[in-house]
Length: 228
Image (cartoon, rainbow, N blue to C red):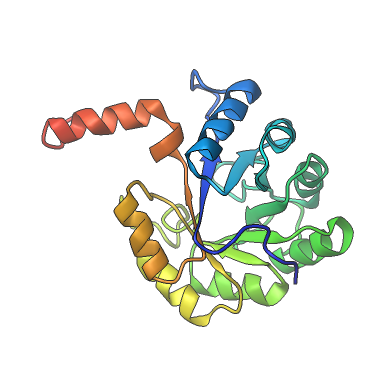
């Protein structure tokens, strides 16, 4: 099992923007990553080889690389070895991938992919999961980290909740032999504290830091008593 390139208690900032966002683009995401590091981020999560390469060259922090490809309703985050190899070659210190039990587009299994990345690329894997069984299976396959990224975003885990899944963090931390990363709907310092108290090794925060449109809308909603 590969070692984790960032310490316990790390805040990872996810620097991604959807194509429709005015912030979409490698140069903007690189500046976002630089700003996040100035604020104290100990690692960055980035999407696609171009962004991974640029950010890894610009910041002195490890980059968790993903590549979103294919069907957004299926296995979408680093679905095959091709995407894993591309982001690792671009400079990712960790490769994150969808480690749910859904069918992969190339017919491989999570265990197949984790072991091949370890053997051929020599980088640690972060397994993005949606539940306890998937997390434990990924750890058994050799993932260096298990993240709760996909809890609430797959048919088997969807609850409609807008809150972080702290129960899953606690359950995984109690049973997993590898560190747990809390990710998904973390917005406040209190959320981070609760995640660390539940046993998280690190916490990933994305839109609450890097999406001004969502931050603006949430601020106005709060000011208007929950009305848009």
